[in-house]
Image 1 (tube, rainbow, N blue to C red):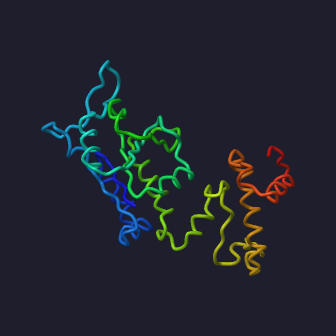
Image 2: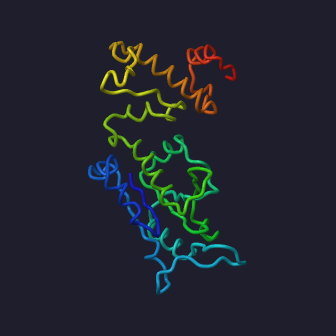
Image 3: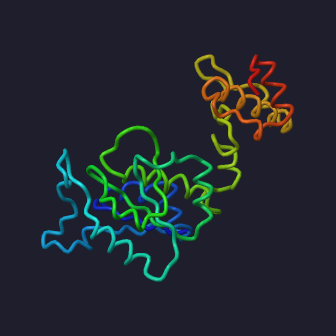
Length: 242
């Protein structure tokens, strides 16, 4: 999968792309991150990409011309969706990550300053937000999207089950995880995880996922993700709004 990232700060991405899972995925050519510097498309002699807003107001606005030309140049004859990381967009979640992972190639535009000239939206298919808080620019948000989507690409993780069991993938928070040592400061690993009984382990993990979701994110509990056994267990825990 190819991520075409339009930004005025491409160096910000070096850390995430040179480490851990994404580094290995790039080396194995499972994903490609094409960093495009919007400044390269500015027609200003100083490569300026922002200006004062018409009508006055605080801050600077990213100019339409560099953005427009950068998008056009990267798309050329290719048909790929353009996503803008901005505060007015729909919140990014695991469902959206799965949707984006189905594309062969996407473009991500990173805003900055007070946002982008409204006319740039004519080339944007969808605006995406990672939450109701303020960032200096869209670069950190774009990194989160790239990382989240890349994990869903076949072969990026050692086993596809690695992401299927993770929080949010199946609508629930993930169950508790343990590793060596078996006992630490008097705290023991649950016996069921040492039993070798895979059916009981699966049951325990499912129940713990239900408990974690009920206690921490009850808003995620949705009948479409739940079996009859899940619903009965939630009732045993005192949850009746399902």
